[in-house]
Amino acid sequence: QVQLVESGGGLVQAGGSLRLSCAASGTIFSINTMGWYRQAPGKQRELVATISSGGNTNYADSVKGRFTISRDNAKNTVYLQMNSLKPEDTAVYYCNAEVWGTSGWFDYWGQGTQVTVSS
Image 1 (tube, rainbow, N blue to C red):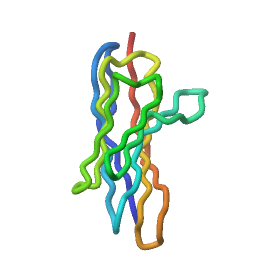
Image 2: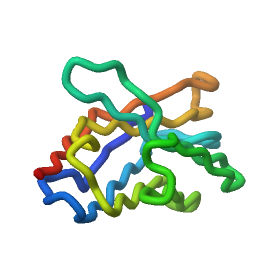
Image 3: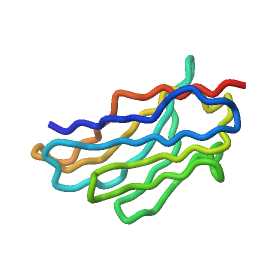
Image 4: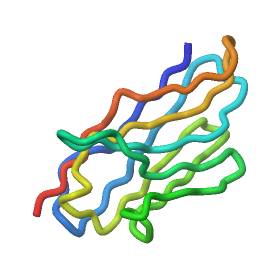
């Protein structure tokens, strides 16, 4: 059984910063792409950023230049550094990972962490 556990969400003023972390645990042979998605009230879940096992990154246009995704493969952990936060960044942020475990390759999701940016 693989679990993704997120941490680091909270309440911050506009212009502030937060750092999210997501650690994968369980029987893990390999992790391919890891990423962050978010869902605001009344909206669909959307991609924020992804990072491949080799370190290639991809960002939504709305966060380019403000957010940075990184990962520590030795710790099976992905991070999201969020700077210059805006009220429109308010959402539940979900971690995602493509994991090779005992049952083969599966997409796993974390439980979500709330990020609230006040104006």
